[in-house]
Image (cartoon, rainbow, N blue to C red; front, side, top):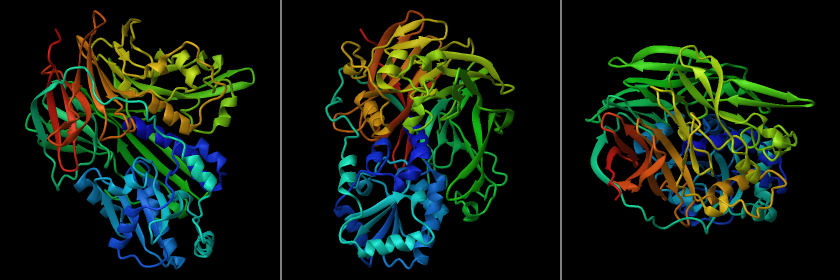
Length: 603
């Protein structure tokens, strides 16, 4: 999930705001457009339940809450603009629900002022193909449930342009979506023929389930980045709904504390951004914490402070500050902290220059006296404008791109200073074959030993676990074999469009969700595509855990993990060093649990 969110946000920021002005052909260069057209019986029933009156009805879609908070906050502004324009139909919001109490709190805090439906089972958003879009949309339907118009919330016309749009709708006799656009969005997002229905490896047994405290008073959201302290007494994870870190006691599962970012200057705990933020030059602080990492019983995280300096229709200014922080029990006060700046490197040769940044993204990796951030440079990492890849130092199809292509950079964990040290190199064969730059590796693809400083990582479509001491462990992979075929492959003449990137990732048929380095082993967690469903689907797919001998560089065993435990879906895994066991994080709309696995010994 975290990987998906990162890619969605990077591409959205660069490209999707200009959708309204684009031609139909240009839609092929946008990875996340709205692929639905025609009539939906589910939407028709939704309008009937609202007792909606009028010919047209505006429905705001929030398929991935919190993925773009400013766009979600803009919904209230758009509602007021529609009312001032004397819109005669109904307005409502459909939110993709995953956690009942957290979703209810989210709707209350946004104060949109219109009916809101939490689509917990996906019957609404799945039926209209808005299940995993990353940005909030405004869609306009008629009373029969037929889609007439749509736009990202930020691109909805305002001022005098909105009444003109509404007048055009009233005078139209057919939906304002061209047939050419329908044909463009009909291109597949997923590889239908790729995937598996079963796996041959043995099933891991669940020996113990620890229910985590989760009730209406906590309003816990979707949890990501699970981590267990070295002494086995504490469990921590990032709460995506609140951008905070939750800490639980083990083995009781009692909620201990919620760590939140420095909220000085924030408007209480509300996520609603005042209208003044969008109409006047102002400063607004947005604070969030990254996924947690343990050093024995001390918890580390990154605090990201985002300052909205100004906002206008044409431009938005955001300044950010980053702090590496540590928290100590029992009071969970800050033990230490260091401000750091994501390091940007500029490379110039002759008339060309290229920039790359070591950026926190979805998190970081803690090592011996240092922490690592993933490197981002070139297409696709820097956005979806393919014109940028005319620069040979930004184009992964060119040899010059690989003059400097490290995977991760090291920073001092005490001072926050960049150590001028990197590990890993982007695989040139994969980059050139698929035209993808430094974008498909993240913190959860890297793991380090905090005692020795040794690190291990895996790259997309590279069948090996690479080690910082120069060794390599052969990786028994679940990627589509044809994706790794190097014989008779026609070299790409250009980088893929963002829509094609999504198809390529799905065509790989599997994704590595986490790598864990322990004193004796390297664990690799795979999410394998279930045939007929997208690889990114949260409720479908097969999970495989592999264990490799760290010293002898051999496979020790692999097991299929149960995708469901007590009607809760597997989200991720964590290593409990005190018990030398792997535990899975499971969640549904109501409950959260840790399930400890017994891994059968292979003969």
